[in-house]
Length: 77
Image (cartoon, rainbow, N blue to C red; front, side, top):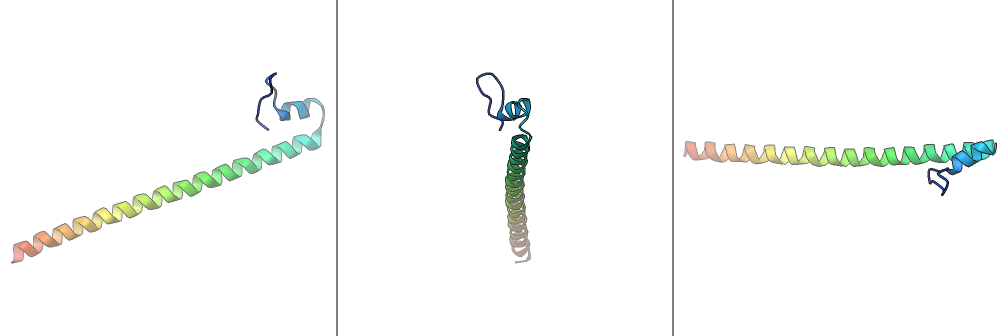
């Protein structure tokens, strides 16, 4: 739908200019679906990134806790 032809017009431009209401509605619906799919993929990627960051933070906290325990054990022995 968004691809430009040599004259700079998109299929949506052409359909609108020529009064093809059904084609205009179809192209808009396809565009809306494409936007929804892209947004869904972006949200999935954001969720994966957030999860990876959270897991890395927890691992770092766990490493710090272990290090503190080792130091405390060394101080007590």
